[in-house]
Length: 312
Length: 312
Image 1 (cartoon, rainbow over the protein chains, first blue to last red):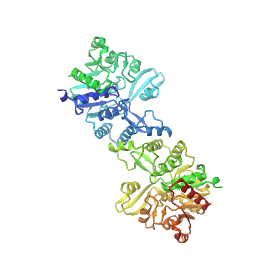
Image 2: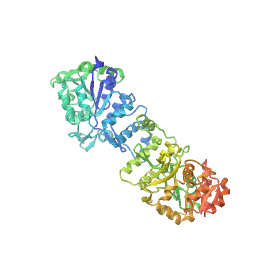
Image 3: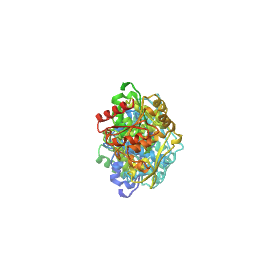
Image 4: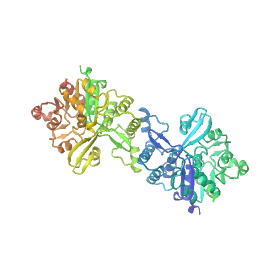
C-alpha cells in the first residue's frame, strides 16, 4: 500500500533530507515530489548556489556529506583555498565537486533555462529519480532583520553565527513569486503532503508563503502532516530556535504548531514532548508523539514509516 | 650589468615561459615586462580562461605544472570530472585550483575591471613581481581556417588534434585592438625586446598584429631579438609546424625569420641549424646559433644568458 502512493515533501536543508532518505527507501523515489526552499539561494564567486536544492539532490543521489548535510561526501576544497589566496574569500565553503554543480547551474541559467529545468537536468544526470522542484522559478531572498541591521540568511547564520537578536524575517520577492511548474499539481495529486523537520521560519516558511502553495496546503489540510524540527525547547540543528524566539514564538512543538496551524492537520512531536499534545490539539492539530531524532538510516526509515502510517 | 636592464618579453605558452624562468633568475622579475598573447582566450563552462596569461603567471609564481606547461603543479581535477558527469564536458581540462583563478578573473571582469587590471591583481596575489600584461584589453580571437571549416584555436588544436589542413589564420577583432595600458611604454623603455620561442603564427603572431605593438617593434628593431621555436624542421612543441606549413612558410628557422623580418634584428637558431645562418642574413636578420632545447632550469638560464649577451 505504501508503495503505491504519491508523496509531496516540503524541504529545507538538514532535517528533511534525512527524513527523505527514509521515505525514498520506503516508498521509492519515483513516488516522491520534493518542493524545495530557494530563499537561501545565494551568489558565491559569481556562481548561483542553491544550498537546499543541492542537499536534497545530493541526498537522493546518495552522495551527500552526511557529516554536515551540506555538500558532497569526501569532496575536496582546493579551489576554495586558492580563491582565499587570490582575494576571492567565499561566504560558503564550496567543495570542488559541489562547485562544479553550481558552475553548471549558473551556465544553464545564463543560457536562459529556468531553475526548475536546470534542477531537473542536474537530477537526471545524478540519477535522482524523485522529482525535485524549486518552490519557485522567481527569485526570493530571505532577509533577517536584526538589531545589527538587515542581513541575508547566510550573513546572519554563517558569517555572524546568529549572534544578532532577530526582530523580523521577510522574504524579498515573495509576493510576486509563482510556484514552479508542477508544484501545485504535485500537491494536488499526492496522497500525503509532508512538511519535513526543517526550520519553520526560513526553510519551510518561504515555501508556505508562496501564495498558491500556501493556499493549496490550506485547501488540502487533511492530508498535510508536519514533523516538528523542535525537540523539547531546542532545534535538532540550525537556527530555528533563535529565529522562532526572535519572532515571538515559543521555541517548542507548540510554537511550531502555531506557525503551521493554517496548513496542517497532524504534527509529529517528539516522545519527550508528549505532555504538549493536548495544548496542540486546541490549535486544531492532532499531535502524535514519535521518535524524532534520526542519527542513522534505520531511525530515518522508522520515522518515515511513522509519518506515512499517521497521515494515510 | 645584466641586472640593471629592463626587458620586455613577448610570450605565448610553453616555450617562452621556459625561457622566462631563466630570464627571471638572471635579471630579476622586477626588471621584466611580459606582453602576453590573449587571442587564445576562451570561455570554458562560462569562465574566462586565458591560457597564455595563466601559464606565464604560474611560471613566475613558481607553481606552473612543468610536465605540461599548462595549469598548476599537482592540481586536482575533481570539478572537471564532476562537470563531465553532469553534462558540462569541457574543451580544456581545468584543474580545481586553476579553475579558481579563472573563476576569480571572470568575477572581476564582470565587475567591470579590464583584463590588464585583473591580471595585475592576480599577479600581486600570487607574488609575481614581473609585470605581466595582456597584449590588449580588447577581445581578439584566433580563427584557424581549414578544409573542415573555420575553427577556434582550441577546436583546431585540442578537440580535432590539428588533423585538418590549414588554409589561413585570422584574428577576429585585431584591427580594432589597442595595446593594453603600459605595453607601448614597456617596449619603449626596455633595453631589449625578446620574442620568445613560441609559435610565430598563433602565439606571438597576434601580439605583433596589434598595430601599435608591431609598429613599436619595427621602430626599435635594433633591440629586438627572437628565439626560434623551430629546431631543424619541427617545432619544439605545439602546432607551429602545421600552422606555418599551412600558410606556405617553410617549417624551419628560415620560415620563422621570414615571419619576423619586419620586427627583429637578431634570431637565435639552434646549433644544428648553423648552415641556415647565411640564408637568414639575406633577410636582414643576424642569425646566432645557440642551444635551444630547455629541458631543465640550467639550460633555461644558459639560453637566457645567451639571449641577453647577444642583444645588448
